[in-house]
Length: 325
Image (cartoon, rainbow, N blue to C red; front, side, top):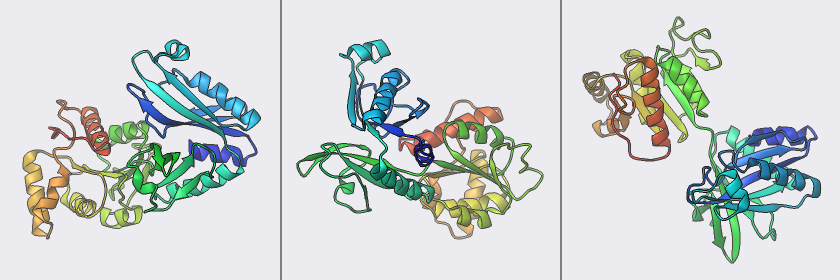
């Protein structure tokens, strides 16, 4: 949505951005969540589950008119929050500001880094004494926070926002399970690429609106790039396709590597990979059988189980070994 904010502003439309900077309790959106509003009232994103959006949009339109930033707080004690539904102890603090020329330049620089899949951080002084800025890797302020949030630093309050590239799922094998997996992963916000050199499998009829790569994994994956925001799901059961993909995935920083197949199938797979030089310890990263243990049987079931496991891995929570065959 920050890309859309840039496009709107570059087209001459005034824009305001609301950003969640603090939360407490059962607040439904994390710090760093955005709602983007343009001058006619069109908006993208959210700062809650929908319960306070109307008030935030109104504040954003006011900010577009007068140019003044606003700090909005919604909590259990607020009449607005009771009306909106934050009655279970949640608290949300959102900063609303017009996208002026200075902030547009900063947003454009940040968006270019995201397009290059380079994680980074931005810092906004909440006292307005200094200008917002990008934080280079290793900047003292950047090192202070592990996630987006408000900190006190050198006598001032700052909101530091960490931006990561969109999560990406690379599916190896345009098999039956891959079809529902690609669809629901896109709904969940993942960029999806399906890699399969077999032309009969990787067709646009079977995978509408999904990027297809008809190269062998050893050719495709180095070009695509495997970064810390990427998950790899290996699905073909064909060693000529699966094994090179696993070898490259395990040598990368991708946050998840999963492989379809029974325990016996995976044991044979591991033996092959060790025989070509992979360390047995590195194979412990592979989630196999792929997916959470939800009793998955159908391709759609397996897809749901696999995506659930991928999301858990992305949130860096402990995983339970799945049972999808």
